[in-house]
Amino acid sequence: MSNAANVRKHKVELNDYDFQRDIKIRLLLSKLTDIEKSILEEIMDGSVKFSVKQLSETLSLKPDAIIPFIKKLEELDFHKMQSDQLTINKDMRKYFAYELNKFSSHFEPSICHVQTLLNKVPIHNLPHWYAISRSADNIFEAIIEKYFHTPKCYAKHLEELSVENPYIYKLYEAILKSDNYCLDVEKIMRQFKLNHQEFEVLMLEFEYNFCGSLCYRRKGIKWVECASLYQEWKEYLQIKSEQSPISLKAEKIKNKTPNEFYFIDELNRLLDWINENPSLKSAEEHFLHFSDLLECALNLHLVTRDKSRLSLVKENLKTWQRKTKPEQASALYRMILGYSRTVPSKINCSEKDLRAIEKELKTVTRQGWISLESFMNSLTAPIREHSPIELHRKGKKWRYKMPEYTDSDKKLIQEIIERYLWMPGILLKGTQGKIHCFSITPFGRITLGD
Image (cartoon, rainbow, N blue to C red; front, side):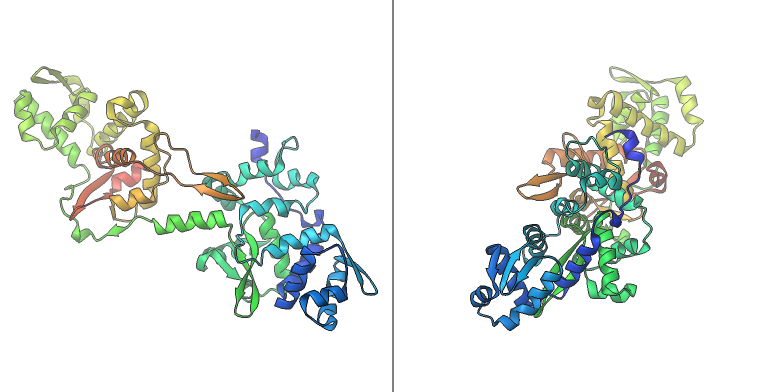
């Protein structure tokens, strides 16, 4: 899709099609009884021509129990009635078949139903409504690509949605706070002080702006209209909620990093040590994280190595010593980023992997101490060969496909967190029993852009 199309905003105009017919049909279905539902289901499965007598015999109902509903359907141009004979409007039967499907216990308010919704609108209006190219080979696929392809682009659509009706935003927020992201229409009408027809207009705007879908749920002996988020979006939000990282009590954390610049302090101590004693073996025996400290000192060009002897690079050391600790930490962080970009094999991870994990860490910057395992379980980052989460179709269903990390992937994630982001002071690390955990530091929040 062209950049010009991307910056254009969509604008849904209900008056571009016969939306009043939709309103009348939805008002009828909202009060549907079990008998009326049985009548409709029989008509859906039967011939386009039949008599009231035949219908009453098939359903074991008296004609007087059928005729009132038949007349309601006639007002909607569902059929023509002459005497006892009915001739069904085939187009309307298709329309009702789709709407009646929403009463099934197996119905899901899925993105796949967007296409049926759009089929009601003259096709030449859709490029204007949704700011897509008129030359698109398949308008529905173009809409899926633009609005639903990834959770990120769908969330962006919701965030940037600009509509005149403020109740669309309020309705979305109300559904978002409800159980299972599905809300009874009666509750909505009471909350927003809307009559039923006003609600149905709101719901059509809600649906055509791709915020969710209308569905029906059985409640006792009657059917209840509900407003729901899309099934695919609900499942994604539920997974993210259920796998949210677990915060731990700070007082129970052991083996904590003493402070955010602990590694920088150790690096400076190593430089002082080398100044007094250039022996590699001597330094190795006195520093807990010697291997990482030496590698950083070498990569920062503060030290050179000649077999078993270490030497300071005086000019670089002077520049280094003039820096504050946050500046030294930033320099170390930039060095790690630089190698991840130019020589990823040197630090065992690429810039793409590092940035992906950093992006996920931004969501927990204020959560205190976090279980590393629970953080990894919550990840959706496209590390290594994993693609970003995308909408996939399997049969008639769409789903956002979540990444499945291998043990090797998890080992990389742990190394990025406990090594490459720990060394420059972006986070502290510790343990709670056998549980590895971490906490974002004030320096880390600044670095991550919080």
